[in-house]
Length: 266
Image (cartoon, rainbow, N blue to C red; front, side, top):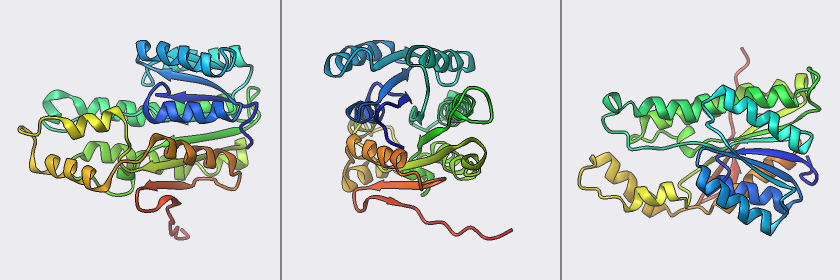
């Protein structure tokens, strides 16, 4: 798919990886609607991008990706403003300190945002882009997972489970190309230079478990990816029409490459 002239929704699109994706699409003459729960940062980012690109090509909508009414309204407004929808990037995600998960309820937040948000976005993307209904003309969905969706992260079991879910969802939706003309792929980055990761590196480790301390040490040893590299991977997945159900990895050692799977015949 050529990005020029297309319309994209990017969840979590106003900072970090999401902002890099939004900019990459705008750089290629696409139009972008950024969905994010952070209204202050969203409005600041909208102002900046409107000045650097065009106010007619970028939109911000405050939206909680776990809320079906808010997501439905955001998708509809995007089409009302831009007239169509071609690309969805389910990027919004969260990682929190996974100690005392049961009492804090943090595990529910991780699952709601990282899994429910992606599923809800995907279903709405199909509703608006799929060719079987009256709304769509085909399109592409890119899910931002994590290397933790391929390799267990012992200090973050719920986060790991949530990202495995995203990879599994992506790989099982390959049939949508035949029925809906919608391609679904995902990218699995390792540690990326975002505010969330920098906070983890610089936090006080005095009350952290050994596993959590070792995770921070591992981040520092591996090095951080740039959000722009992840955005480049997303662009490749959008533009390469041969990629259906593909799982791209992004690591400091290999850069961008694809995970190979053996799928037995059942």
